[in-house]
Amino acid sequence: MMQMAGWTVIRLPEGSWWDWDVVAWDVGQLRLGAGHDLTYHHGLELVFGDPVFVVCPATFHDPVFRAPTPDEVRLVTGQVGETPAVLAAFEADAGGPDPARGLIAAGQLDIVQGTVFRYWRENLTSGERLAPWVRPPTA
Image (tube, rainbow, N blue to C red):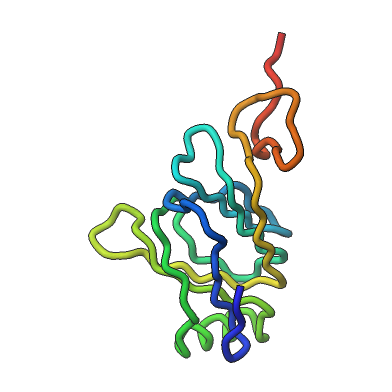
């Protein structure tokens, strides 16, 4: 992640981060997952702590992260009443004729790498975990 004029420009680690989706979203956290194919797992997560403003498609492809525009800064600051610690902006392919815009304001951002399985799996090794919705099979 790189800071520019107080705003966040996300720099992703090396990898194939084509497919993206919202893995989890609640009052305290917005978690976006990324990988080359989200069918069985993902390998990267952007974890926005304390999100206060979110415009983000549920699924999208090949995002281009950039600095927020002055209009986006004014919009978010006007909506939340203060300057957020993190303000991330991007354009991505969400299936429509034009690129979809994403704008996320939050208290913090963590970039987490590791394999996150989207199906039940036992005997996880170091760096592996299960997606929040995965539950063990019932007998």
